[in-house]
Length: 366
Image 1 (cartoon, rainbow, N blue to C red):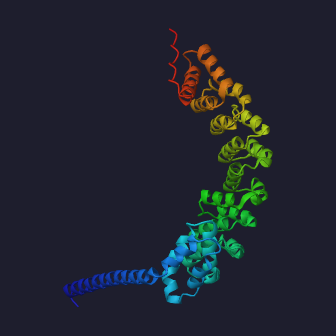
Image 2: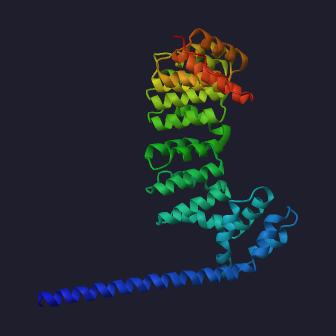
Image 3: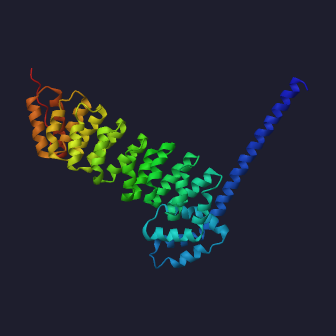
């Protein structure tokens, strides 16, 4: 075969492949549109029952529940995606009724079976459904999925375990961060949903080797107001090897607001601590809201690091009359210095919050 014939054959094969691909795409789109129209037609007559199911009280749902539970398989396949979508949007009696329907249709049973599917898409979809159903029996199988080879499956399992709310899943959820691929915020949200029952696992995680696990434990303890863990968090602030974990510990202590938190945060503003920790501690003292922090914050107005001084001033602006007096004295006694500038800014913020025109800055002495 000559070179010209070879080129012609190659072009012909390429043209045929492009034509075949085009036919596949067009056919696929046509089938998709046909399936959508068919499903819309099949579900149109059922939609009133769904609306009645989620709109009635507990004594009025039996009839639509029976009607929907008795649908033949073809019609149910058309209705099921919409029913699952509704489950994530309703609460109270409406949610209870939807869960009853989906359980009766075997959705939980099928999803449990699909958790061991060879398809990662099916495993993730099954985990998603079981989370929406808050299906307690799925907790242990979902924990196994936290070591799945697919990152999306692991992330979906974390979210589902948070929705189910089994406190015993806290330790495996925390450990999922070490495997990678699961977003930090997703793990934190799941742990928050587990409630106080997760706190023993969170406290234990404060001593884990992985800094991400320690960080998420600190973050969640602060967000959930676990005041009984304040001393443990003070220990993290004092000795953790990760600056990120220590910054999160500062933030958590500011949220908890116990006396031991105040002393630790004042100490954390000192020069022995990394700048990031000092900056966050200056803010956390404002979150704490204690007038006892005023002297320490006033001293920080003259700090050499801008953000430490700036955050100290913003915290003073939140601490009421004792702080206002300290700010006014700083403006008068340190006129023309950066400390006075920070103090004046904080006073201006207080004026605006009180609905008064902001005061003019003090003149710089010549």
